[in-house]
Image (cartoon, rainbow, N blue to C red):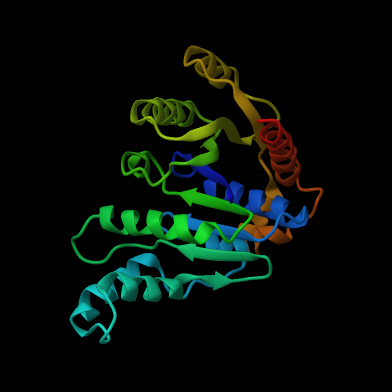
Length: 256
């Protein structure tokens, strides 16, 4: 059974970068094959991983709506759609990627999310690990895109607003009774030390940060030059912090 890790949080908190660094750690540790899932309609996980996205769940669904009157003889709608969805898989060395993308037209994302969940459930069985980068905010939780997760990392930037966002996400997870085995709060873009106002807000909301990810100029430089974060050196401050956290969390999981 695939071990699943998901990241969620406020927009601009660095979720995609952290998801990429989780994948970097898994690849470097030989924990393959890995399925990377970009469940953010504003898709950029592929760029962070050095993988080119050709098709998305959203584009396939849009094409399917146009083509369904011409489904090949002998095929059901469901079987034809399942066949088409396989076109979204981008294959890499020990790492594959699927991307949700945007729905087209005036329809909401509800149907794409239902399709994505079913598709992921079937596909994930072929991988040792799945890592999902979710969209900003909480709407994906209300649609239950993020469920049956072994580890959910709630990412805040170094701000009081970011901390309040992850508190709301934490409360929504509890309200919706989502199946998350372990929830970890991570503060990203931390300068030399955590600001006292953020420490105060964490304490007020009853949140304990499991890790602080330092502000890392190397991550910024790689993003600026569109270099895959998988190529970051081992001495990167963010790489070290993410690697230390996931090493610890995976050791906890083996004891469950």
